[in-house]
Length: 210
Image (cartoon, rainbow, N blue to C red; front, side):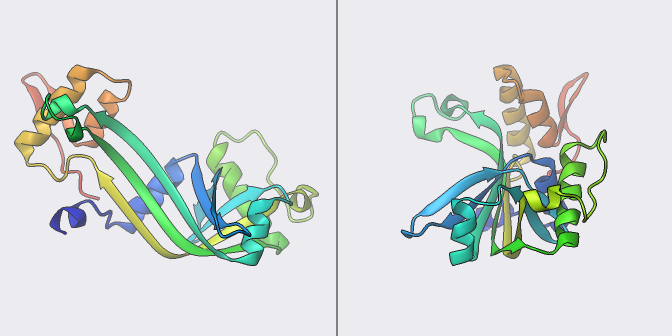
């Protein structure tokens, strides 16, 4: 229980920041046979809800009309930790550093043109921050050409494992091994862990406290 508590993201601001830094989320609805259907989606978190755009027809929309209870999940795998980092003789020691957010909520198919416009503009701002497009207005045809799904969270839980569960000596040692393994994400992972390179080696610059 103590470890689980240390892995929980406690800051709502950090939760929102993480959500809107990620490109893909996954919505889970229940199909007509009672099986979960999981679909990857572009999304934006704004005004304390999740918005997604969709084709105007499809199984997930029918699922939502039948049962509005859904799950929504976003995750980012930071670094795979090979088992030999801990024990070369025990493959079960392999691990992963990660950040994830899981939402349970009520899904609504938005019909109000002003709210659909708000959602579409928020999605454009997130995915095309450089601009180069005309802002969407409620009277535009595009508002009728897409469906907007809104997920109103009932609960939001975030977990992260970036070395905060380790003492400083162990975290520095793990950072050293990650840099030596030299994966494509190694430098960024170590930075997220709050570890920086110095002339004397590695040092902890800040505590990874979310």
